Length: 219
Figure 1 (cartoon, rainbow, N blue to C red):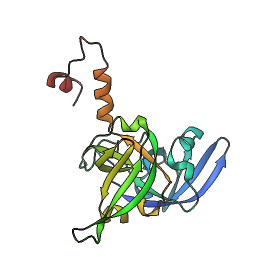
Figure 2: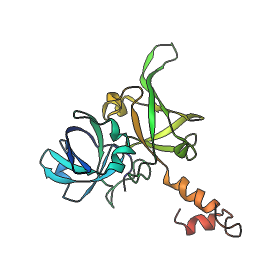
Figure 3: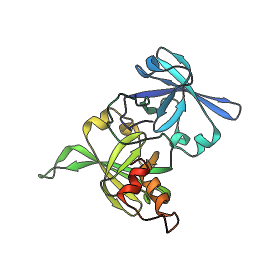
Figure 4: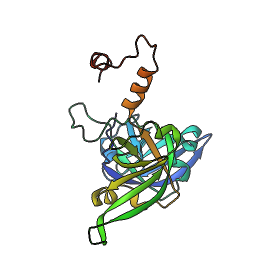
């Protein structure tokens, strides 16, 4: 499990076709030091298995399904990717529950400077994303959404357009600044919304939503 708090930005230095799969090599300063063969790591929001680990790099194999159904379809050598190691059992929960399972691919509309009270560019940004219907139905105002592996809070939701306020720290320490309008981005909805949806679709005799039911489901 992850929390959407990006630990560092890595660089894809090699993409190699191996049979039907692609193997990517990611260069990173810190993450490889804590990885072992077979360990999980979130790469721009996708949970991958680390292989061929070296002091400053690791590899991961991408099945055709992963390549086609994620933002990796735009990946090229030199691309920047967000990295997060799994949350430790005794760690601090900094973002929200992120599984590394992409629910859909959105499209970056623009990263726009927020204007201050004087009409001048501030230090902060509006991130505008077009989101598909399979993610939009789980997205709510002031709720959590994971974009490219980053835990973010929805500031505005208008049909299939999601707007998020971004501070300078997030732009500087993630791959957001390297993306261009039209680029695909990985999206993961809040898993709690999926559980609530399933509970509400249950038999009418068991579908009443109460505190007791929620506690019984682990919330």
